[in-house]
Amino acid sequence: MNKTKLAQATRTSPLLTLVSALVLTVTTSVVAQAEEPPQSWVPEALVMPEDMEMLTDREIGGSLRMFSFNTGEDVDELLTEWEEALRLAGYTITQAQDEALERVIEFSGQGISNAKIAVTPSLLDDLAVIEFDATLQ
Image 1 (tube, helix red, strand yellow):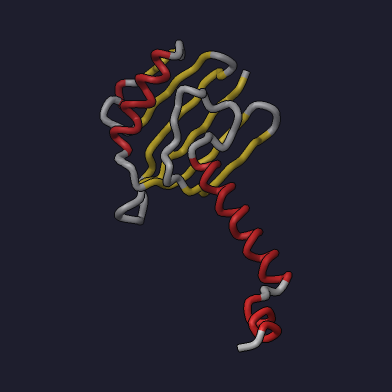
Image 2 (cartoon, helix red, strand yellow):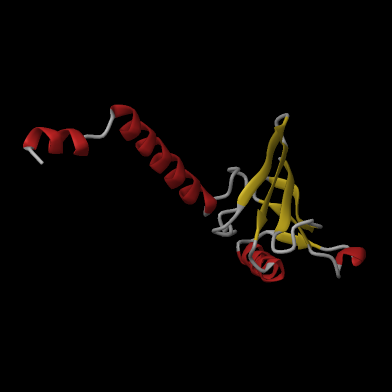
């Protein structure tokens, strides 16, 4: 093969280069975001699951915030870790009698009037859905 044909065979089109760069950028953004809370009000003490996939993300008015995601991680373990992290960070944990056996954490403090983290039923056997709801001060 001569040099001209070799150069043409190895040359990538500008469009292919642009698409590849875009895919890498989006993939990197999604992976980086997975470890960070999707909304700024979420206490820094809470470490989000690496495999979280956002389902909803809403801000209603100036104080209502909601988001949900699914994860394949053990949600009972996550809730136990999050409750302890919130307690150590100075948040007030409240639990009603009927919530003692449910997968729910209610908390307040540091700019949050009240917030709830709840595991909701999922139709996907290997994934759990976790919802965060909050009223900010």
